[in-house]
Amino acid sequence: MAASHFSQFLAEATVPEFDTDCPMSADCLYGLYVSWCLLKGLEAKPDVTFRAAMHREGIDLHDTRLRMVGPAAADYILSSYPAAA
Image (tube, rainbow, N blue to C red; front, side, top):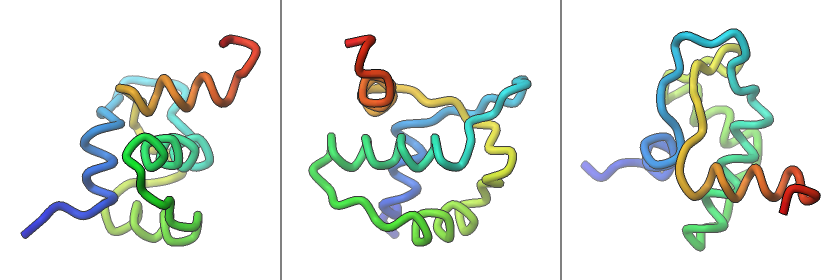
């Protein structure tokens, strides 16, 4: 069975971060997802669809315990803080 669009996103753009006092917020995770989609040439699903998919993937959006990595992380950071570019 092929990996879902969302599980592929999680595998490519996040890594577990169990020892953190500041887990990534749901809004930040969605922003990372949008950046990932843009880099992949995919149309991002609406936030409500994304949140339901994260629930199905076992991600607690109140305590994600994830860290962003890879090209999508760089894109998200630069897009979020344009003065840094």
